[in-house]
Each structure stands twice: as structure tokens, then as C-alpha cells.
Length: 224
Image (cartoon, rainbow, N blue to C red):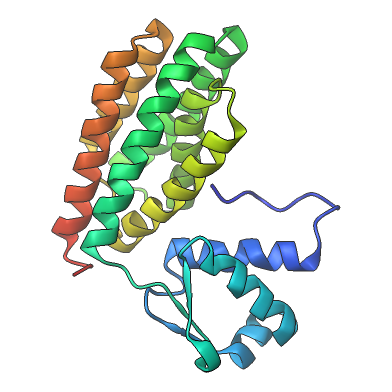
């Protein structure tokens, strides 16, 4: 999930990479949009050569397509990719749950409690119709799911899951609507099952959670 930039060690290129990536995931750069380098150079205050390097990096995550000499465009959105991402997220997250539940300690439980507290507060506001801080919910949603699997002891698995989660999130941002009480109930149940170390129960909730997410995006009619 995209992080807030605060480390002094980050280069300008690192900062802009995060900004462009966030703009793609949030939908600020729409699927299929041509990325005009001269305009993007002004938008992100970076040289064209550095921008090319950044966009080339994003092609490795399938967030940007290179068009040879014609430049770059934001990767299009499709039902096929959404379903593939859902399948991959299911495999990765259910596997990580098994590892994390086995190894999790009191510190891990504390991270889950803290993450769910913030997420539940944000969801309460959304259910009440306050959408002014939807971006907070997006961040807290990721932090909660990340906390659940954070004891899996595999940096490679966490990195892969983070990338897939962000690409899956892009589709939810396109849907432009909150899933409502059902998603709140899923998170509460997942929270309870994690503290009980109920691996199979949590896996079942995650599978349902991801499937309903796909259905929600498709119902929005915003992708082919």
C-alpha cells in the first residue's frame, strides 16, 4: 500500500514514483489515459528523463503500458484483470493468514486491535454518509489487512500481497462507492477470528470478502 513520504533518505525520483503510483491507483490518472510527458513533467516537477524511468518502473507492476516510441499510457481496466487479481489476492492472503496466525504473538494482536479500531471508526463515518475522509478509510483498510498477515515472517510474500492489493484497490476506487454494512461485518468478523487464531474461519471470510468486492465493482458498471 502507498506510504506517506517522510523519509529524508528518499530521492526526488522516489517521491514522484509514489505520487504517480498513487494517482494511478486512486484513479486521478484514469485507466487507458495517455501520459503526456511534457504535461506530466510540469505536474510532478521532474525532468522528462527521470519521468521516463519512473514510468518504466511502473510497467513492471502492470500499472503503466509502454507504447514504444509513442510514450506511455495508464494500464486499462478490465473484468478479466479484476478477476485474475482477485484470484491471486485470495491465494496470497489465505496463505499468509495461515503463517501469521501460527506465528503471531501479543505484539501482533496489538497491531490488529489498533488497526481495527481506526478502521471501524472510519467505517462508522462512511455508514453515516460522511465521505469527506474516504482516503482515511482506504489507508485504514490496508493497514488492517496488513496487520492480520504481518506475522507471516515473509517479506517476499508481504511485498507480493501489497502489490496485488493496490492493483485490486484501483478497481474499487473506480467503483467510487462504499460497500456498506457487509464490508464492515466482514472486517469485524475477521478481527474476531484473528484473535481466536481461527485460520479456516478467517480464510472463509477473506474469500467471501474478495468475491463480494469483485461483484461490487462489476455492479458499478465502470469497467467492461
